[in-house]
Image (cartoon, rainbow, N blue to C red; front, top):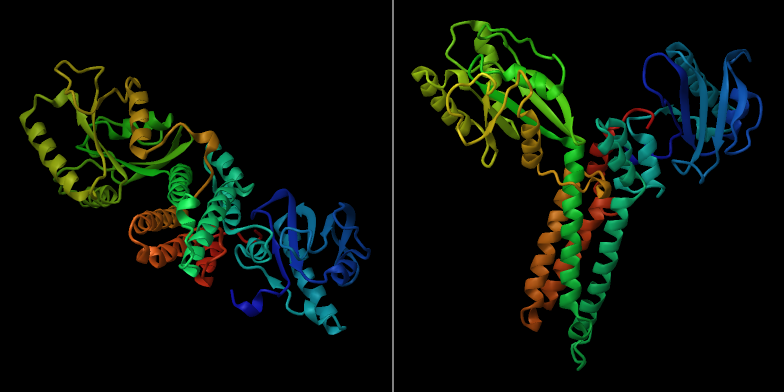
Length: 468
C-alpha cells in the first residue's frame, strides 16, 4: 500500500463470501457522519446499535438492518468506523457496497472532498490501519489472522492469548530490562573517569544472565506456538500394500483413502490434516515405491519422492507378513537408503512395522509395531509424532507465534550471548557491548513492529482476509 493511500476512506464486505443470515459492510475513514446521514437518513449515537433502513440513491430501502457507528479514536482502526449489518445475501451486500461508494462521491461533489477517495479495502487494510494508528501492535495484528485460520482448539486459545497481548507483554518486559542495562553501559562509556564501577555495582552480569534466561523461556513458548500454527508435514512411504493408506485412515479416524489388496491402488498423494493434542499434522499418503511400467503409477511415485524430499518426518512402512521374503527384504533395504538420501538432514525417519495382528515372526525392536487394521499401537505412534514435532505439555501458557518471531528472538539470543562475552572482557570492549545490546533491542522491536520495514508490513497484511 502506498503512503498516499493510508488516509483514503475504505469500504469492504467484512463477512465471508456466500449466503448467510447476516452480512456486514464496514467503512473506515475520517469524518463519516455526513455519509451516515445520506445512507440512513438519521444520525447515529456512537457505539449504539440502531435498527434502520439502508437507502439507495432514490431514497428507497436496499435493506433494513443494524447500523453501528464508532467515532474516532475509539474504534478498531482509530478512525471513524461504520458497520452496516444487513441480511447476508451476496447481491444485497454488493448493492450496499456500491451505494457507499456512490454516496461518498456525491458528498465529495458538494464539499466533502475527503470522501472522494472512498475505495474498496485491500486485504488486511483495516487491521493495518489499527496497527499504524497504535491500536494494536504487529503481533496482535497477526494474531487476528491466526485466529481466523486456526484449525484446532489449542490454536484458537493460543491465538487468543496473542491477540490479548500475552506475547507482546513478554517482549515489552524484555525490552524494558534491556533498555535499563543499556543505560548503565552508556553511563560507564560516558563517564570513564569516574572511580565507581557502574556495571559491577549494578550487577550487569546478573542482569544480562536474567535477560538470556527470559529470552530462552519466551523462545521455547514461541516455538510451541509456531508449531500450533504451522504443524508438521508427515509423509507415509513404503512398498505397495504395506498398509500406508490403512495407516492414514487409522490416524485420521475416517475412511479417507481407498484400501484394497491390489498393489498400486494409491496412484497419487492423499493428504489430510489431523490433530493430536491440538497440534496439526499434515499427513500425506503416497503411492507405493517400486519399479513400474504403468505411466500413471510412475507419476504417482515421482510425486511420492517429491513429498518425501519436503517432509518434516517420514513414516517408513514395513509389512511384517512379508519379512521372510528375500526380495521384499532387499527392496526394503534399498528404499530405506533412498529415503534417507532424499530427506533433508536431521529429518526423522520412523520405521513402522505394520500388521502386528497377523505377524508370526519376530517383530524388530527398532521403530513402532502396530496394526493399522485394528488400531493396536497407533496411539503409541501418535505420541512418537508429537515427540518428533517437539511438542511439550505447556499449552496453557502458549501464545501463537510465527517463524519471523522465532528468528527475531534467535537474533536477540545471539546478540545477548555476544554481549556476555564482551562484558567479561576488558574495558575497551564496552563500546562493542553497547552495540550488541542495541542490536538486541532492535531485534525485539521487530517482533512487535516498532522497528519494521514497509516491505515486511506489506507481506504480512497482504495475507489477511479482505474486510479484516
